[in-house]
Image (cartoon, rainbow, N blue to C red):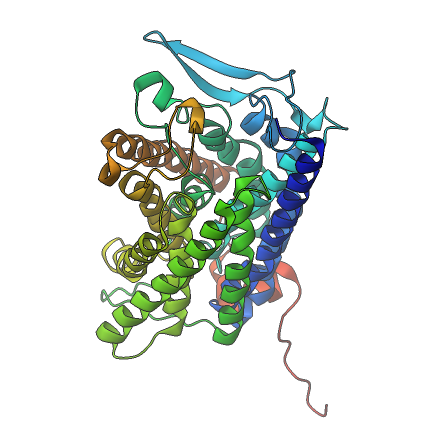
Length: 450
Protein backbone atom coordinates (compact mmCIF):
# COMPACT_ATOMS: atom_id res chain seq x y z
CA UNK A 1 0.00 0.00 0.00
CA UNK A 2 1.51 3.38 -0.97
CA UNK A 3 2.26 5.83 1.82
CA UNK A 4 -0.07 8.71 2.53
CA UNK A 5 2.44 11.12 0.94
CA UNK A 6 2.65 9.12 -2.29
CA UNK A 7 -1.15 8.81 -2.34
CA UNK A 8 -1.44 12.59 -2.08
CA UNK A 9 1.09 13.05 -4.90
CA UNK A 10 -0.78 10.51 -7.02
CA UNK A 11 -4.06 12.26 -6.34
CA UNK A 12 -2.55 15.56 -7.44
CA UNK A 13 -1.26 13.89 -10.60
CA UNK A 14 -4.68 12.46 -11.45
CA UNK A 15 -6.41 15.80 -10.88
CA UNK A 16 -3.89 17.73 -12.99
CA UNK A 17 -4.31 15.18 -15.76
CA UNK A 18 -8.08 15.54 -15.52
CA UNK A 19 -7.74 19.31 -15.84
CA UNK A 20 -5.95 18.74 -19.17
CA UNK A 21 -8.71 16.41 -20.35
CA UNK A 22 -11.31 19.01 -19.40
CA UNK A 23 -9.42 21.53 -21.56
CA UNK A 24 -9.97 19.20 -24.53
CA UNK A 25 -13.54 20.54 -24.73
CA UNK A 26 -12.01 23.70 -26.18
CA UNK A 27 -10.36 21.60 -28.86
CA UNK A 28 -13.56 19.74 -29.69
CA UNK A 29 -15.48 23.01 -29.94
CA UNK A 30 -12.92 24.48 -32.34
CA UNK A 31 -12.53 21.39 -34.51
CA UNK A 32 -16.26 20.76 -34.90
CA UNK A 33 -17.14 24.41 -35.44
CA UNK A 34 -14.32 24.97 -37.90
CA UNK A 35 -15.33 21.94 -39.98
CA UNK A 36 -18.97 23.02 -40.24
CA UNK A 37 -20.63 26.04 -41.83
CA UNK A 38 -20.69 29.53 -40.39
CA UNK A 39 -24.49 29.62 -40.21
CA UNK A 40 -24.34 26.83 -37.60
CA UNK A 41 -21.31 27.99 -35.60
CA UNK A 42 -23.16 29.02 -32.44
CA UNK A 43 -25.19 25.82 -32.43
CA UNK A 44 -22.11 23.61 -32.83
CA UNK A 45 -20.22 25.51 -30.15
CA UNK A 46 -23.26 25.39 -27.86
CA UNK A 47 -23.44 21.60 -28.07
CA UNK A 48 -19.79 21.12 -27.13
CA UNK A 49 -20.33 23.62 -24.31
CA UNK A 50 -23.63 22.35 -22.90
CA UNK A 51 -22.72 18.66 -23.04
CA UNK A 52 -20.33 19.49 -20.20
CA UNK A 53 -22.80 20.67 -17.52
CA UNK A 54 -25.61 18.36 -18.59
CA UNK A 55 -23.48 15.23 -18.74
CA UNK A 56 -21.53 16.02 -15.57
CA UNK A 57 -24.75 16.28 -13.56
CA UNK A 58 -26.12 13.06 -15.07
CA UNK A 59 -22.89 11.20 -14.31
CA UNK A 60 -22.81 12.55 -10.76
CA UNK A 61 -26.40 11.57 -10.09
CA UNK A 62 -26.42 8.08 -11.61
CA UNK A 63 -23.61 7.35 -14.05
CA UNK A 64 -20.66 7.13 -11.67
CA UNK A 65 -22.54 4.69 -9.48
CA UNK A 66 -23.48 2.53 -12.46
CA UNK A 67 -19.91 2.55 -13.76
CA UNK A 68 -17.78 2.42 -10.61
CA UNK A 69 -20.19 1.35 -7.89
CA UNK A 70 -18.67 -2.12 -7.75
CA UNK A 71 -15.02 -1.03 -7.44
CA UNK A 72 -13.59 -1.35 -3.95
CA UNK A 73 -11.10 1.45 -4.48
CA UNK A 74 -7.92 2.57 -6.17
CA UNK A 75 -4.91 1.74 -3.96
CA UNK A 76 -2.62 4.38 -5.47
CA UNK A 77 -5.09 7.09 -4.44
CA UNK A 78 -6.21 6.05 -0.96
CA UNK A 79 -7.72 3.45 1.31
CA UNK A 80 -10.08 0.83 -0.07
CA UNK A 81 -13.79 1.56 0.32
CA UNK A 82 -15.97 -1.24 1.76
CA UNK A 83 -19.48 -0.05 0.87
CA UNK A 84 -19.62 -1.12 -2.78
CA UNK A 85 -21.99 -3.29 -4.76
CA UNK A 86 -21.82 -4.78 -8.25
CA UNK A 87 -24.99 -6.33 -9.67
CA UNK A 88 -23.95 -9.70 -11.07
CA UNK A 89 -25.37 -12.56 -13.08
CA UNK A 90 -24.23 -16.16 -12.65
CA UNK A 91 -24.25 -18.36 -15.75
CA UNK A 92 -22.48 -21.67 -16.45
CA UNK A 93 -20.78 -21.43 -13.08
CA UNK A 94 -19.27 -18.03 -13.84
CA UNK A 95 -20.12 -14.62 -12.44
CA UNK A 96 -20.64 -11.70 -14.81
CA UNK A 97 -20.59 -8.15 -13.45
CA UNK A 98 -23.32 -6.05 -15.08
CA UNK A 99 -23.43 -2.67 -13.36
CA UNK A 100 -22.57 -0.92 -10.13
CA UNK A 101 -25.14 -0.02 -7.50
CA UNK A 102 -23.46 2.35 -5.06
CA UNK A 103 -21.93 5.84 -4.96
CA UNK A 104 -25.02 7.41 -6.60
CA UNK A 105 -24.79 11.20 -6.27
CA UNK A 106 -21.51 10.47 -4.44
CA UNK A 107 -23.51 9.52 -1.37
CA UNK A 108 -21.39 7.87 1.29
CA UNK A 109 -18.13 9.25 -0.07
CA UNK A 110 -18.32 13.02 0.56
CA UNK A 111 -14.98 13.06 2.37
CA UNK A 112 -13.11 10.35 0.45
CA UNK A 113 -10.32 11.93 -1.63
CA UNK A 114 -9.81 8.73 -3.63
CA UNK A 115 -13.45 8.51 -4.64
CA UNK A 116 -13.80 12.21 -5.34
CA UNK A 117 -10.59 12.29 -7.35
CA UNK A 118 -11.62 9.26 -9.36
CA UNK A 119 -15.05 10.77 -9.98
CA UNK A 120 -13.41 13.89 -11.37
CA UNK A 121 -11.05 11.86 -13.54
CA UNK A 122 -13.85 9.59 -14.78
CA UNK A 123 -16.33 12.37 -15.52
CA UNK A 124 -14.04 14.25 -17.91
CA UNK A 125 -13.44 11.01 -19.82
CA UNK A 126 -17.20 10.54 -20.07
CA UNK A 127 -17.69 14.10 -21.34
CA UNK A 128 -15.15 13.42 -24.08
CA UNK A 129 -17.08 10.36 -25.22
CA UNK A 130 -20.41 12.19 -25.07
CA UNK A 131 -19.00 15.06 -27.15
CA UNK A 132 -17.90 12.90 -30.08
CA UNK A 133 -21.37 12.47 -31.67
CA UNK A 134 -22.05 16.23 -31.61
CA UNK A 135 -19.73 16.64 -34.58
CA UNK A 136 -21.20 13.77 -36.57
CA UNK A 137 -24.77 15.06 -36.05
CA UNK A 138 -23.98 18.75 -36.45
CA UNK A 139 -25.99 21.11 -38.67
CA UNK A 140 -29.32 19.24 -38.40
CA UNK A 141 -29.75 18.09 -34.75
CA UNK A 142 -32.39 19.80 -32.62
CA UNK A 143 -30.88 21.33 -29.52
CA UNK A 144 -33.62 19.92 -27.29
CA UNK A 145 -32.96 16.40 -28.59
CA UNK A 146 -29.25 16.91 -27.99
CA UNK A 147 -29.97 17.89 -24.36
CA UNK A 148 -31.95 14.68 -23.80
CA UNK A 149 -29.12 12.69 -25.36
CA UNK A 150 -26.55 14.28 -23.02
CA UNK A 151 -28.44 13.07 -19.97
CA UNK A 152 -29.06 9.57 -21.37
CA UNK A 153 -25.47 8.88 -22.43
CA UNK A 154 -24.02 10.14 -19.14
CA UNK A 155 -26.43 8.29 -16.87
CA UNK A 156 -26.75 4.95 -18.63
CA UNK A 157 -25.14 4.22 -21.99
CA UNK A 158 -21.53 5.19 -21.36
CA UNK A 159 -21.46 4.01 -17.71
CA UNK A 160 -22.78 0.55 -18.55
CA UNK A 161 -20.09 -0.32 -21.06
CA UNK A 162 -17.53 1.49 -18.88
CA UNK A 163 -18.48 -0.74 -15.97
CA UNK A 164 -17.82 -3.87 -18.01
CA UNK A 165 -14.26 -2.76 -18.77
CA UNK A 166 -13.18 -0.49 -15.90
CA UNK A 167 -15.72 -1.11 -13.14
CA UNK A 168 -15.45 -4.78 -12.11
CA UNK A 169 -17.62 -5.89 -15.04
CA UNK A 170 -17.60 -9.03 -17.13
CA UNK A 171 -15.27 -7.91 -19.94
CA UNK A 172 -12.52 -7.14 -17.45
CA UNK A 173 -13.03 -10.58 -15.89
CA UNK A 174 -12.64 -12.58 -19.11
CA UNK A 175 -9.14 -13.52 -18.03
CA UNK A 176 -10.29 -14.84 -14.68
CA UNK A 177 -13.49 -16.51 -15.87
CA UNK A 178 -12.41 -17.92 -19.26
CA UNK A 179 -8.63 -17.61 -19.31
CA UNK A 180 -8.60 -14.98 -22.06
CA UNK A 181 -5.36 -13.17 -21.30
CA UNK A 182 -5.89 -10.37 -18.80
CA UNK A 183 -9.48 -9.82 -19.86
CA UNK A 184 -10.35 -6.89 -22.07
CA UNK A 185 -7.57 -4.35 -21.53
CA UNK A 186 -8.20 -0.68 -22.33
CA UNK A 187 -5.62 1.54 -20.70
CA UNK A 188 -7.10 4.99 -21.38
CA UNK A 189 -10.28 4.57 -23.38
CA UNK A 190 -9.85 3.19 -26.92
CA UNK A 191 -13.12 1.28 -26.58
CA UNK A 192 -14.69 2.79 -23.46
CA UNK A 193 -14.35 6.42 -24.56
CA UNK A 194 -13.65 6.62 -28.27
CA UNK A 195 -15.26 3.58 -29.81
CA UNK A 196 -18.36 4.18 -27.71
CA UNK A 197 -18.57 7.77 -28.97
CA UNK A 198 -17.96 6.69 -32.56
CA UNK A 199 -20.58 3.95 -32.48
CA UNK A 200 -23.14 6.35 -30.97
CA UNK A 201 -22.27 8.79 -33.76
CA UNK A 202 -22.91 6.08 -36.36
CA UNK A 203 -26.30 5.21 -34.88
CA UNK A 204 -27.30 8.86 -34.65
CA UNK A 205 -26.21 9.66 -38.20
CA UNK A 206 -28.25 6.74 -39.51
CA UNK A 207 -31.37 7.85 -37.67
CA UNK A 208 -31.10 11.57 -38.42
CA UNK A 209 -30.07 11.12 -42.02
CA UNK A 210 -27.73 13.32 -44.06
CA UNK A 211 -27.74 17.08 -44.33
CA UNK A 212 -29.94 18.51 -47.06
CA UNK A 213 -28.39 18.25 -50.54
CA UNK A 214 -25.45 16.16 -49.32
CA UNK A 215 -26.44 13.18 -51.46
CA UNK A 216 -28.01 14.33 -54.71
CA UNK A 217 -30.66 12.44 -56.71
CA UNK A 218 -28.19 11.86 -59.55
CA UNK A 219 -25.90 9.94 -57.18
CA UNK A 220 -23.24 12.62 -56.77
CA UNK A 221 -22.04 13.68 -53.35
CA UNK A 222 -21.79 17.37 -52.54
CA UNK A 223 -18.72 18.71 -50.78
CA UNK A 224 -19.94 20.84 -47.87
CA UNK A 225 -16.84 22.68 -46.74
CA UNK A 226 -16.28 23.93 -43.22
CA UNK A 227 -16.03 27.66 -42.73
CA UNK A 228 -12.82 28.01 -40.71
CA UNK A 229 -10.04 25.51 -41.29
CA UNK A 230 -7.48 27.46 -39.19
CA UNK A 231 -9.87 27.15 -36.24
CA UNK A 232 -10.02 23.39 -36.78
CA UNK A 233 -6.22 23.16 -36.94
CA UNK A 234 -5.80 25.04 -33.67
CA UNK A 235 -8.48 22.86 -32.09
CA UNK A 236 -6.62 19.75 -33.20
CA UNK A 237 -3.45 20.97 -31.48
CA UNK A 238 -5.44 21.71 -28.32
CA UNK A 239 -6.78 18.16 -28.37
CA UNK A 240 -3.29 16.75 -28.90
CA UNK A 241 -2.08 18.72 -25.88
CA UNK A 242 -4.94 17.57 -23.67
CA UNK A 243 -4.40 13.97 -24.76
CA UNK A 244 -1.23 13.78 -22.67
CA UNK A 245 -3.47 14.15 -19.63
CA UNK A 246 -5.76 11.48 -21.02
CA UNK A 247 -3.04 8.87 -21.38
CA UNK A 248 -0.39 9.64 -18.77
CA UNK A 249 -3.01 10.31 -16.10
CA UNK A 250 -4.42 6.81 -16.58
CA UNK A 251 -1.45 5.40 -14.71
CA UNK A 252 -3.21 6.80 -11.59
CA UNK A 253 0.28 7.24 -10.21
CA UNK A 254 2.80 10.07 -10.47
CA UNK A 255 5.60 7.70 -9.52
CA UNK A 256 4.97 5.13 -12.26
CA UNK A 257 8.10 5.30 -14.49
CA UNK A 258 6.01 4.15 -17.45
CA UNK A 259 4.63 7.70 -17.68
CA UNK A 260 7.53 8.71 -19.92
CA UNK A 261 6.87 5.80 -22.27
CA UNK A 262 3.17 6.66 -22.38
CA UNK A 263 3.87 10.30 -23.26
CA UNK A 264 6.39 9.44 -25.98
CA UNK A 265 4.14 6.77 -27.50
CA UNK A 266 1.21 9.20 -27.50
CA UNK A 267 3.23 11.80 -29.38
CA UNK A 268 4.77 9.37 -31.87
CA UNK A 269 1.49 7.67 -32.78
CA UNK A 270 -0.25 10.98 -33.39
CA UNK A 271 2.53 12.22 -35.66
CA UNK A 272 2.64 8.92 -37.55
CA UNK A 273 -1.11 9.13 -38.07
CA UNK A 274 -0.86 12.64 -39.47
CA UNK A 275 2.03 11.61 -41.74
CA UNK A 276 0.33 8.64 -43.40
CA UNK A 277 -2.94 10.51 -43.80
CA UNK A 278 -1.04 13.31 -45.54
CA UNK A 279 0.57 10.83 -47.95
CA UNK A 280 -2.79 9.12 -48.55
CA UNK A 281 -4.80 12.23 -49.39
CA UNK A 282 -1.97 13.83 -51.32
CA UNK A 283 -1.71 10.72 -53.49
CA UNK A 284 -5.42 10.26 -54.17
CA UNK A 285 -6.57 13.89 -54.19
CA UNK A 286 -3.41 15.49 -55.58
CA UNK A 287 -3.63 18.05 -52.79
CA UNK A 288 -2.71 17.95 -49.10
CA UNK A 289 -6.16 17.98 -47.47
CA UNK A 290 -5.17 19.52 -44.11
CA UNK A 291 -8.61 19.00 -42.61
CA UNK A 292 -8.27 15.26 -43.19
CA UNK A 293 -4.67 15.35 -41.92
CA UNK A 294 -6.00 16.82 -38.66
CA UNK A 295 -8.26 13.80 -38.41
CA UNK A 296 -5.28 11.54 -39.14
CA UNK A 297 -3.42 13.00 -36.18
CA UNK A 298 -6.47 12.48 -33.98
CA UNK A 299 -6.85 8.94 -35.30
CA UNK A 300 -3.29 8.19 -34.24
CA UNK A 301 -4.08 9.51 -30.77
CA UNK A 302 -7.22 7.40 -30.51
CA UNK A 303 -5.41 4.27 -31.69
CA UNK A 304 -2.59 4.49 -29.13
CA UNK A 305 -4.95 5.23 -26.24
CA UNK A 306 -5.62 1.60 -25.46
CA UNK A 307 -2.04 0.33 -25.66
CA UNK A 308 0.30 3.23 -24.83
CA UNK A 309 2.02 1.68 -21.75
CA UNK A 310 2.17 -1.84 -23.19
CA UNK A 311 4.17 -1.18 -26.39
CA UNK A 312 7.52 0.25 -27.46
CA UNK A 313 7.95 3.60 -29.25
CA UNK A 314 8.60 1.83 -32.57
CA UNK A 315 5.36 -0.09 -32.19
CA UNK A 316 3.52 3.14 -31.34
CA UNK A 317 4.69 4.55 -34.67
CA UNK A 318 3.37 1.45 -36.43
CA UNK A 319 0.01 1.76 -34.68
CA UNK A 320 -0.22 5.40 -35.74
CA UNK A 321 0.79 4.63 -39.33
CA UNK A 322 -2.06 2.14 -39.65
CA UNK A 323 -4.50 4.58 -38.05
CA UNK A 324 -3.45 7.27 -40.51
CA UNK A 325 -4.54 5.05 -43.40
CA UNK A 326 -7.70 3.85 -41.67
CA UNK A 327 -9.02 7.40 -41.15
CA UNK A 328 -9.33 8.59 -44.78
CA UNK A 329 -10.14 5.10 -46.06
CA UNK A 330 -12.96 4.47 -43.57
CA UNK A 331 -14.25 8.05 -43.92
CA UNK A 332 -14.58 7.37 -47.64
CA UNK A 333 -16.40 4.10 -47.02
CA UNK A 334 -18.80 5.78 -44.58
CA UNK A 335 -19.61 8.57 -47.06
CA UNK A 336 -19.43 6.90 -50.49
CA UNK A 337 -20.37 3.31 -49.82
CA UNK A 338 -22.71 3.66 -46.85
CA UNK A 339 -24.09 7.11 -47.80
CA UNK A 340 -23.77 8.33 -44.21
CA UNK A 341 -23.13 12.01 -43.59
CA UNK A 342 -20.53 12.71 -40.90
CA UNK A 343 -19.41 16.35 -41.17
CA UNK A 344 -16.28 15.97 -39.03
CA UNK A 345 -15.28 12.32 -39.57
CA UNK A 346 -16.04 11.24 -36.01
CA UNK A 347 -17.08 7.72 -37.00
CA UNK A 348 -13.75 7.08 -38.72
CA UNK A 349 -11.54 8.81 -36.17
CA UNK A 350 -13.12 7.54 -32.98
CA UNK A 351 -15.11 4.45 -33.95
CA UNK A 352 -12.76 2.75 -36.40
CA UNK A 353 -9.50 3.83 -34.78
CA UNK A 354 -10.88 3.00 -31.34
CA UNK A 355 -11.49 -0.58 -32.50
CA UNK A 356 -8.01 -0.71 -34.04
CA UNK A 357 -6.49 0.61 -30.82
CA UNK A 358 -8.16 -2.14 -28.82
CA UNK A 359 -6.98 -4.87 -31.16
CA UNK A 360 -3.47 -3.42 -31.12
CA UNK A 361 -3.18 -4.40 -27.45
CA UNK A 362 -3.90 -8.00 -28.37
CA UNK A 363 -1.31 -7.86 -31.15
CA UNK A 364 1.59 -5.83 -29.80
CA UNK A 365 1.56 -5.77 -25.97
CA UNK A 366 5.14 -6.82 -25.25
CA UNK A 367 4.95 -8.09 -21.68
CA UNK A 368 6.83 -5.20 -20.07
CA UNK A 369 3.85 -3.70 -18.21
CA UNK A 370 0.52 -4.59 -16.66
CA UNK A 371 1.42 -6.87 -13.78
CA UNK A 372 -1.70 -8.47 -12.28
CA UNK A 373 -3.95 -6.45 -14.60
CA UNK A 374 -7.60 -7.37 -13.96
CA UNK A 375 -6.49 -9.89 -11.35
CA UNK A 376 -4.41 -12.06 -13.71
CA UNK A 377 -0.77 -12.69 -12.78
CA UNK A 378 2.02 -11.61 -15.08
CA UNK A 379 2.28 -8.72 -17.53
CA UNK A 380 0.01 -8.11 -20.52
CA UNK A 381 1.19 -9.85 -23.69
CA UNK A 382 -0.26 -9.85 -27.19
CA UNK A 383 -0.26 -12.61 -29.76
CA UNK A 384 3.16 -11.58 -31.12
CA UNK A 385 4.64 -11.96 -27.64
CA UNK A 386 3.18 -15.30 -26.69
CA UNK A 387 -0.46 -14.87 -25.65
CA UNK A 388 -3.01 -15.31 -28.47
CA UNK A 389 -5.83 -15.33 -25.91
CA UNK A 390 -5.32 -11.62 -25.24
CA UNK A 391 -6.32 -10.86 -28.82
CA UNK A 392 -9.53 -12.83 -28.27
CA UNK A 393 -10.29 -10.74 -25.17
CA UNK A 394 -9.68 -7.55 -27.15
CA UNK A 395 -11.91 -8.71 -29.97
CA UNK A 396 -14.60 -9.62 -27.45
CA UNK A 397 -14.57 -6.06 -26.12
CA UNK A 398 -14.89 -4.62 -29.63
CA UNK A 399 -17.76 -6.94 -30.53
CA UNK A 400 -19.52 -6.25 -27.22
CA UNK A 401 -19.25 -2.50 -27.84
CA UNK A 402 -20.90 -2.74 -31.26
CA UNK A 403 -23.47 -5.29 -30.09
CA UNK A 404 -24.56 -3.20 -27.10
CA UNK A 405 -23.83 0.46 -27.83
CA UNK A 406 -25.12 0.54 -31.41
CA UNK A 407 -28.63 -0.90 -30.82
CA UNK A 408 -29.01 0.98 -27.53
CA UNK A 409 -28.11 4.28 -29.22
CA UNK A 410 -30.12 3.50 -32.36
CA UNK A 411 -33.35 2.79 -30.49
CA UNK A 412 -32.76 5.77 -28.23
CA UNK A 413 -32.50 8.09 -31.22
CA UNK A 414 -35.56 6.48 -32.80
CA UNK A 415 -37.54 6.94 -29.58
CA UNK A 416 -36.55 10.58 -29.21
CA UNK A 417 -37.35 11.13 -32.87
CA UNK A 418 -40.86 9.78 -32.51
CA UNK A 419 -41.69 11.48 -29.22
CA UNK A 420 -39.84 14.80 -29.40
CA UNK A 421 -38.26 15.03 -32.83
CA UNK A 422 -34.54 14.71 -33.56
CA UNK A 423 -34.14 16.90 -36.58
CA UNK A 424 -34.78 20.55 -37.30
CA UNK A 425 -37.14 21.50 -40.12
CA UNK A 426 -35.91 21.93 -43.66
CA UNK A 427 -36.43 25.67 -43.43
CA UNK A 428 -34.36 25.89 -40.25
CA UNK A 429 -31.58 23.83 -41.77
CA UNK A 430 -31.50 26.00 -44.90
CA UNK A 431 -31.46 29.24 -42.93
CA UNK A 432 -28.96 27.96 -40.39
CA UNK A 433 -29.47 26.72 -36.87
CA UNK A 434 -27.91 29.81 -35.32
CA UNK A 435 -30.57 32.31 -36.32
CA UNK A 436 -33.59 30.03 -35.96
CA UNK A 437 -32.72 27.35 -33.39
CA UNK A 438 -30.37 29.36 -31.15
CA UNK A 439 -31.55 32.96 -31.64
CA UNK A 440 -27.98 34.20 -32.02
CA UNK A 441 -25.50 34.32 -34.85
CA UNK A 442 -21.74 33.89 -34.69
CA UNK A 443 -21.21 36.25 -37.59
CA UNK A 444 -24.11 38.71 -37.76
CA UNK A 445 -24.31 40.68 -41.01
CA UNK A 446 -22.68 44.10 -40.92
CA UNK A 447 -25.22 46.91 -40.93
CA UNK A 448 -24.93 49.50 -43.67
CA UNK A 449 -23.32 52.75 -42.58
CA UNK A 450 -21.19 51.09 -39.86
